[in-house]
Image 1 (tube, helix red, strand yellow):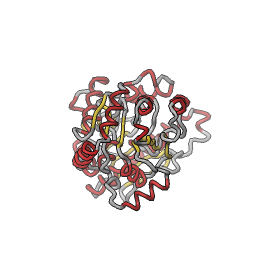
Image 2 (tube, one colour):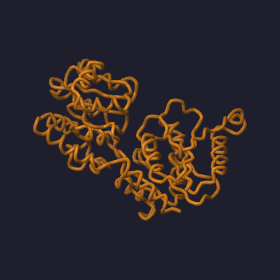
Image 3 (cartoon, helix red, strand yellow):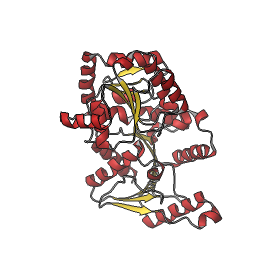
Image 4 (cartoon, one colour):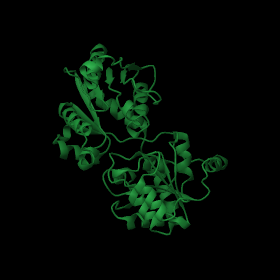
Length: 374
C-alpha cells in the first residue's frame, strides 16, 4: 500500500500539536505494516522541524519555485510541483495534512480535520489568506472519501458545519508519548527548577496565549485572587513576549515577579515542567482535542481545564472543569486544586485516564482506515 502525505503541515507548524501527530503516528503505522510505503511531500522552507522518519518513509523535498513564482505566482507553482510529485508517486491513497488535494482523481482521498477553529471564531479570521484556507478546507471535506478527525466533539462540529454524513467521518483519539511520565529523580527535578529559577510552587500554562486560548481570563483570575501568595504563574512557549494587554495587567497588579514565561521547551524538558508544576491549567475556549492536558495527566500533574468542546472528552472525570468565560470559576478551580487531598485525587485519576491513550492505538486505527479505503 502506497500512501502520499502532503506534509505541508511541517512548514506551517514545525513544533505544534498537529505536526506531533504525524511524527508519532507514521513510523508506528510503518512498524505495524512492513508493506506500507509513505511518500511525505515537504515544502522547501522547512529547516529544523522534527520530521517522521524510517525506512518506509520517503521524504520528498519540493523543487525550487524560482523563478517560476514571479511568472505564475507562488501558490500556482507550489500546487504544480505537488501535483507532479503526486503523479510520480502513484499512490493508493492521498492523505492531506493541511487541506490540499490532487487536481486529478486518485484511487482514494483522505483528509484529516483536527479542529474547526476558523469556523468557530470567524471574526478572528477575516484576512484573505484565512478565507482562502477556509474555502479550500470545505473543498477538501466535500471531496474526501473519508474525513479523519481526533475527537467526537470535532466530528459533531464537522457534521454540523459541513453537512457531512456521519458514515464519512471516522474518529481516532490522539495519544501521549513515553517521554511524558512521572519523574522520580528528585535531583533531576531540582536541576530543572534551578535552571529556570522556579523557586516557588507554580501553576503551569503551555502554548499560545492569544484569542481563543483565553489566557487573559486566566491572568485576570490570578491577578484578582490571593493565589500569588501561594504559587507563581508560569507560561511556556507561545508568543515570544507578553502582549501590551497582558503586560498591562501584570504591571497594574504588580505581578512581574510571580508571572513569567519560559521559552519553547523540548519534550523531555516539557515533561520536567509538568512534573514540577503544582497544577496545569488550560482555559481554552475551543480545542479539537487538547494534547497538553493529556500530557500533564500522564506526568501526574493535577489538571484544571475548560468544560467546552473536546476537553471534557479528553480528561473525563480526571480534572476539575470550569466555565472558561467565568474568571471567578477559573480562580476557584485553581484554589481548589491546591488542596492536598484534591491534588492527590487528581493525580491518581489523571494517571489512570492518560494510560488509556496511546499513539500505538492511534496508528492502529489509522492503518485500519487506510485498509478500508482500498
